[in-house]
Image 1 (cartoon, helix red, strand yellow):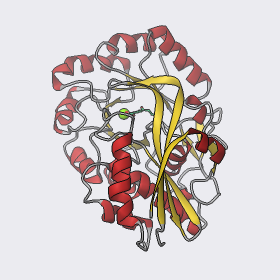
Image 2 (cartoon, helix red, strand yellow; image 1 turned 135 degrees about the vertical axis):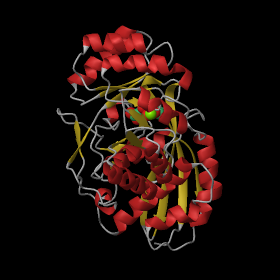
Image 3 (cartoon, protein in one colour; image 1 turned 90 degrees about the vertical axis):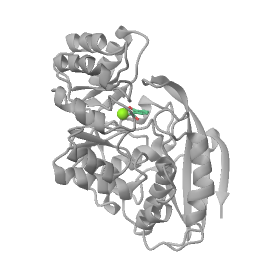
Image 4 (cartoon, protein in one colour; image 1 turned 30 degrees about the vertical axis):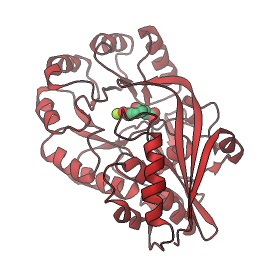
Length: 370
Ligand code: OSB
Ligand code: MG
């Protein structure tokens, strides 16, 4: 595959409802889309960095600069034997996995199209026809609002509810959720809002038999999580701190958690995500596919990823309409009444058409390398 040109587009897309985590509240996304062109075909990727460097060190502007000035120049003009070449060609760029991963995913999509394969087949997925879906529900202004949102998602069929927590929106809120919904599959995501000094508070969550608590401690910590896990009955799920498959090996060795959330961008693309999946599978650690409020391209890539065999738990990949009044793909991502997304689309690449009219309408800038 000769990489002739890489085009970045920045989109401004308002969310249908604000999304609040322990680190910030988002009303609109600034998303970078990557188009990689080769011999008359285009592959598409989405960079999953947020609007601010609060989830990890990346944000829209840094991702744009890294993709334009470091990732694209290392690929444009080269003839790649396979999409697996992208990771070694860009790995010496330290950090910035989301910027690297968005471009890498576009090359996988391109390769799938060249081979006339759906993306899930190209990456070795296809273990399931439908992926099990949960939802991630942000911090709300009031508890009744949260309860109402949970009810709406349960009515839509979603298989598990994840609620965001932070100090002051945790034990008392979860207690009220459990009183109203005693038997749902429930979990909490702290996005690094606690320290080991909060171990008693986190221990109090054991009363609510959560499926797991996600990344309670620092975004870059494994060691403290290993100290916390034996104190809790609730399994810890690691998110932010697992940026490579090697981190997963270390975390598993230290028993820092019992579950891992895999995000394509956070780990730098499909090659590393697949390695991470395999490390977890061999160690008996279940994984699920996380989300970063993706538009349609990133959402479709997540669906393909979640067809790998060890994605056995419901993930955070959900219907387009939960976030967007209109998505950039056609058809939108939809869920079945059983809370699944039908994954095995046969169309080459990520399996959906692009809505170019809408994408152009929300594009705020473009730049081409090559
Ligand atoms: O930690 O999983 C997270 C969104 C933005 C940043 C971090 C996270 C999230 C989510 C949203 O939980 C998941 C989704 O895309 O639905
Ligand atoms: Mg998380």
